[in-house]
Image 1 (cartoon, rainbow, N blue to C red):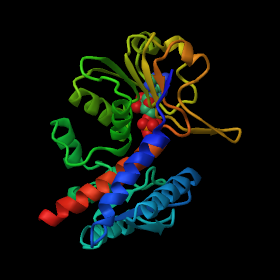
Image 2: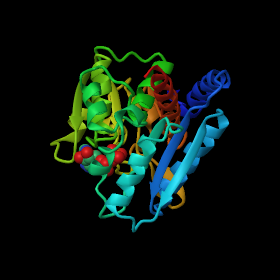
Image 3: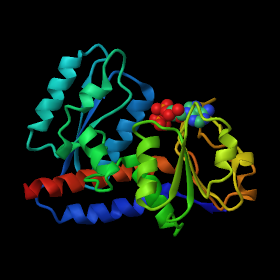
Image 4: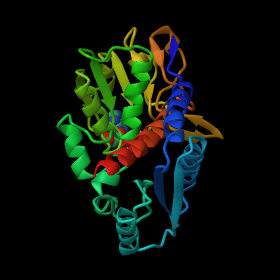
Length: 278
Ligand code: ADP
C-alpha cells in the first residue's frame, strides 16, 4: 500500500515556496485571527505561524478573547482588509459561541481570503474558476497528484458536507473530472456508497467511522479527520487491515494536516502576487 505521506509532500512544496519568497524584496504576510482558547485551534495556529517562519513569510496572530463581540471581530477584519501589509487573512474556526462565523467570514475581502471561505470565492470555485483553493481540499488533490493517482473519470466519494471540507472537496474533485458522490449524516447506507469509491475522502469528524469493510479493492483513501483519543491522534479512518484492500492511504497525523498548511502558504503567496497587479 502506498502511503500518502503529506508531511514529505508538504516539505517539498514549502522548499519551493521558500525559494520563491527569498527572491522577493517585500515579503507576503498572513494575518491569523484566533478567538478564544480552543486547545486544538491554538495548536493549529502555532503550526501555521511556524510554517510561515520556516519559508520566510511574515505572519501575525491576533488573539481575541472568547467574550469578544461580533462587532469587535468584524471591525478587526475590516482593519486587516485595509492594512496594506496584510496580504491574506485567516479566521481560525470554529468560533466560540455565540459568534456567527458566516457573518464574520463575509467581512473578509475576497482578495485576502486565505482559505477560500467567502461566498464570492466559493462561487468562483463552484464555477470551476477559483482565485484561491480551500486549503484542506486542495491539499488532498495535491497529495493524490503527487503519487500519480488519476482522478479524471474515477468514482470519488466524499464523506461529510461541511463548508470548509466536504463541499469544496467535492467541487475540486468535480473540477478534476471525477464522478462525485457526497455522503452526510442523513445518507442511507454509507457503506454501500463507500464501497463504490475509487477515491474515498473521509471528513465526517467521527473517529474511525470508516474501516476496511467500507473499502473497495484498490481504492485510494484520504483521511481528513483528526481526533485526540487517550493522548493519541486518530482519524476518521481505522487503518487496521487497510493494507489488504486500499491502494493508498493517508496517515493521521502526517497526512492531510501538513498539506493544509502548505495550501495556506501557497494561497498567501498567490494573494500577495495578485495584489501587486491591482
Ligand atoms: P469537518 O470540519 O471535518 O468537515 P464537521 O463536523 O464540520 O467536520 O462536519 C461533519 C460532516 O460530516 C457533516 O457534513 C455531517 O453531515 C457529516 N457526517 C456526520 N456523521 C456522518 C455519518 N455517520 N455518515 C456520513 N457523514 C456524516
